[in-house]
Length: 274
Image (cartoon, rainbow, N blue to C red; front, side, top):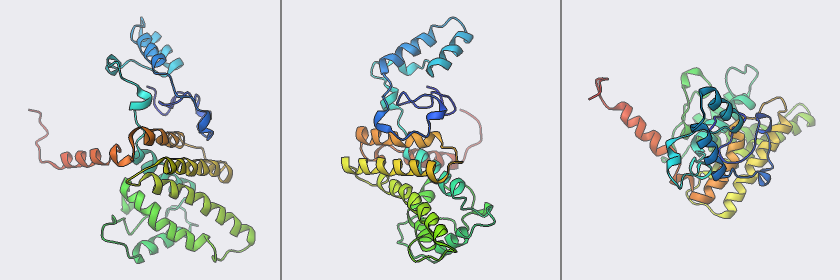
């Protein structure tokens, strides 16, 4: 299947062309037909030349893989959209760093010092994962998915509500209204993260998750028209489909595999096979 830079960016539905990434009318999206995908994969496999294969791939976004030898293979259902990478490491990071520009590189930002104050001063339960006290600095390093989850559901809301919410001080009513809209937009994403990361799910929660993602996607277009939406903005809608298929994300997201990779990387070895 084609990657996120292709016009065939979605492995689940028939949305085509990168110009459609910002769509949020998810009820109208048609799931790709697995039999058609199989035919396209076979056509690619039996093409007479590399040039012919490349032409087919450009027009369909499908290449052959040995997985197509399995009669039950259906990439629209079995290539899951991982909530850890799609939502936590991508959308959350994208929203706070690139949309709101909450980092120390933004010299005019008053919010980033407030965030570090909240991280330092907030008392949290022992089971809650820690986050870097120097958020926004290069010295904080690359944040992990669980750190983004904690920041977006605990520390960012406390900091931003205290600065942008009811009772906060601003130069004018217009500025206050603008910040309140930014806060409501941000809280739509925060709510989506909270709902999708729960240990249990239901039809109601799945619907709530999709509503929050839609509100965030709509707000991104209205409040930040110069910000280009990412493919993950589209793929996040499809997590609803996989919640319906496989249940809570704890059953199928990538945290256990990433943890195993970390354990393997820390094992002593001599860089030689055998």
